[in-house]
Image (cartoon, rainbow, N blue to C red; front, side):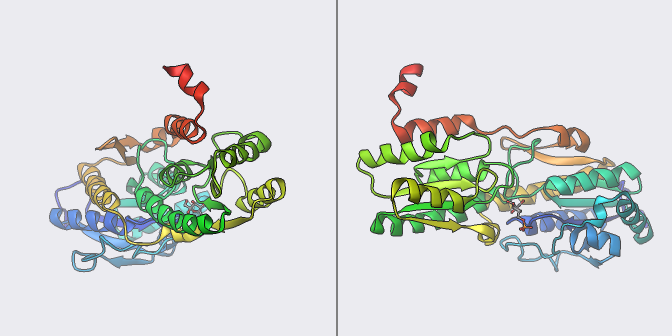
Length: 337
Ligand code: F6P
């Protein structure tokens, strides 16, 4: 039966690394679809599930109470098969077979490349919702999950700092972020780290790590924290080199997947809910190949192929403030005042 909207049956999937807030986005979309009277299905295991036809009906009852839950109730995966044109074709044909004429894809960069390929075939209208702890999607100032992951990492580093202070040690902490340093930058600033290493900034180990720790030691510090983005360096090798070169007892911690779990923070719950709503409205209006995004505090949307071309700027202002404050660089202030 036709709903009077541009879509009659919408599938929702989560793909790539999970992020806190995915469930809230699913719920936001499902509730909006129900209000509009549009059929709603969950596609399990991301694009792999779309290729296999692994779908379940979704309604308001099934998504009740999931806003505050981490992970994704639909499971997620990185499908190799979907990265081939045959896989995309199979998924598209499955949509036709299942009567799915709209698809909401929740995830990161890889998810949207897949969504773009699928929308190009024209069988299904597609809208994407950016959801990754990396905050590395160019077209949006914010991706769902980032705030929660930052908070989780900050809490862990605060705990590490207590024990490093007691033992007068150096702590090297590796955080996630894929090829970007947004997570590392925010965690480093929020925990008062001695050094933050991100892929966007090149380092001379002797000058930017060894000398900086030495300088901090001369000012009376006896414990140090180095936050290393996984895309910048191997945290373990940074720790080994610091111990060797400075003779400071150093401990390495990789925070790993703990950063991806846990109940989403308010920002992620609210953003996800609003983006879920927006994605449905785009499809209901008949738009396709759109990517929901944030511009400051406002929800907007972009053409997906244009969005995929955009690069996420690194926040050099924050990075430079951090550097200036950490090393009390009088030259830096002399240059601006
Ligand atoms: O993109 C999210 C992310 O957590 C990255 O920060 C990290 O590099 C990657 O996923 C880890 O992937 P996996 O869960 O497959 O180990």
